Length: 479
Image 1: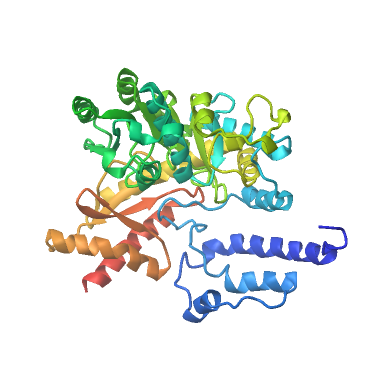
Image 2: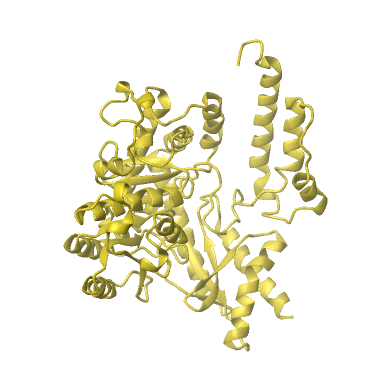
């Protein structure tokens, strides 16, 4: 872009208008409906928008965004949003996203600010969750789904090498079937990763969990020994630092002991829950996390970094680089130093400047501020659990270990099938009312509601409103 091409005054005016629009939007969120279905006409206007034949002025585009897009959010910016694991955007991250877009580099490697900043923020993330991080032992990704692919690829390659094979050159055909171990609560991104890496989802064994939702060590050991006796090659255990269903945190120490004994790669899915280690009240649950071979987590969840931003961390830098490094002559760069390019540690070549919004979010709050926000969320979750246990209409289904609360409506007088149907229909019906947003899931054989608390501006009054809405909606459905 040349000086003549840059729309200087027009851009400045539109940028100021955008800042005002976004600031007003964020300020007004608590007073708006959490979510509402899109008006049919508005939806069709977006779906059927014709390809523009001519351009439009920037101020007109900003006006269209304010009119046609911002009034119809997913709802996750609102303090009464308790759905899935989606956070409100951190204001510092919102501002940094604009600046990063203005630079628009490829953060694959080289000697420019974004590359060095990513090294720093990945180290910061590792420090926040207490995971050892050698230089080069991690990178930012689009999310934990991609981070899981990165980590499991390294696990696969190590297992092949230990078996005397080079899977990058020879593929998986020269190996006995590789077997991994998960639980029924393991996130589906692990299965996707196994399928994409050629491992096959049938080679993921589902081991039992105890009443507390944690992986059963005895059942894991039995499964590993059984597969070895059958001539298979166990190589991976996936533990959780906060399951998406109930927020359960596995007992990492005994799992790590077994993995070291059996030469298995221990991967921890910390997408949502790993940052819970910042809360002194629950930090003990994460003992042994640092012994994992890899950890995948999402700054765009509990830290509030604007989407997208995940992170893959590994203990052994060379395992990761050896899995992905393939440097063509035109990308050789001595200035990159001994660590090389980020593109040697994952699947992406052209990579967005994710680090600036992470840097801004963490730097704005500091460790103390982040810890305070996370501790407030877990305290609110425990309080919600108490309110549910004190309510005769509701039933708490699992111990509140992090900031997810699993519960259901008791629906007295209904049989189990009808009770399940009611709890299955409740989340969508509550969402339609617009006052709170909660989602559902299955826990074992039970339909349930799950409230995830990630917003530190949520109040106890919001919790009471959530339960009131659930009960009022249930009464309507029962009528």
